[in-house]
Length: 429
Image (cartoon, rainbow, N blue to C red; front, side, top):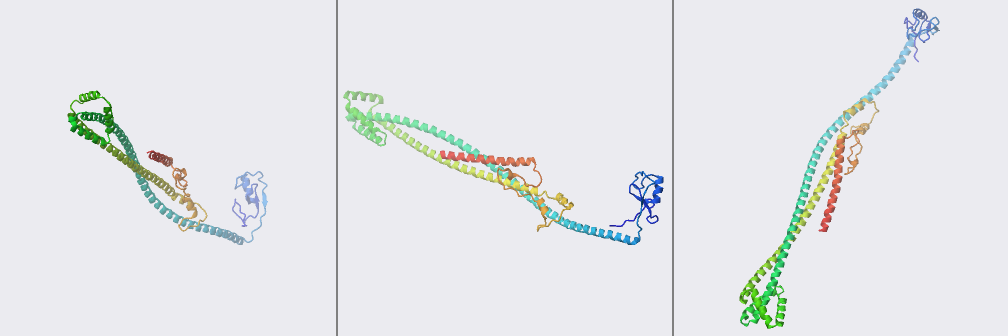
């Protein structure tokens, strides 16, 4: 413990007057100095506290200092050793702070280089995001064009179907009229043959009509049955009935048998031409129907494949855009670690942190690097959340990402529903 010499604060002397006295407040002065001062003013010369009993000071008896120089040397040595110990402690702190400053400088340079690299990567990702957005826009336009083309093809199919139905009804009506004309011609030819058989003078005409009738019957028009019915009817009828039938037939045909044979042959040729045209029209209608159906099925299948391909490309582009946006947000969050955090780290008197091979210590790396991001997935809010970098995302960014994820989920559900309906339509067809 250091030795302190008594000193009067009134006369500032330590050796002339060995007698000391203390006041009630505890301050010590020479006895004579105390009496003189209290005679003038009843208060302590140091603290100015009022003295209640000024003429009863407490006498102090101090031991005399025999070796003042020796005691002074002892006091100075104690102070010197204490100051040397404090100086060593402060020097160690200074060395630690210098080492920490060097490490912080290295970390600062490494972070600056990392920020520059991340800025260049962010620019590249921005360009890629813009390209993918343009591609998504183009694919959306192509998908809309394909849908419009599908609608036009469906309307064209409906129009062709209606036209085919109209043509079918027209051909059926023509066929019905041709059959009616054929029946009338069969009846007239059979009547002419019967007339020619009764008339012996017109045997060449009867043979010509019979050949014509047999040729017409060989084409499958059903004239043989009508001829047999007419022959059996003529054989069973009386002669008077034959005369009346022949007269009525001549009056109905309006001419002689030779003239009627010429007219019948012309009508038969016209009927044959009509039947040939009708058959060709039926074949053409069937081939046209088959061709249109095949072309329609091919066009529909090709269109469905193209639509599925476009949907797949659109989904892939949207996934890529979401992935790039997530990486961009992650890099922006990592780029926030800059001068502010480094300066705060310099000012703090934290404990020494070991540096790794990359020049970053553990505490700086833990503050700079964000937490491990969750796996990227569509339709999940956790996949779209930014890394935990201490910065809050802006509301418009959160809304944009949520809208994109919601549109993606709705688009996926709608595309699956459309594919299911298209497969059901193909199965029904």
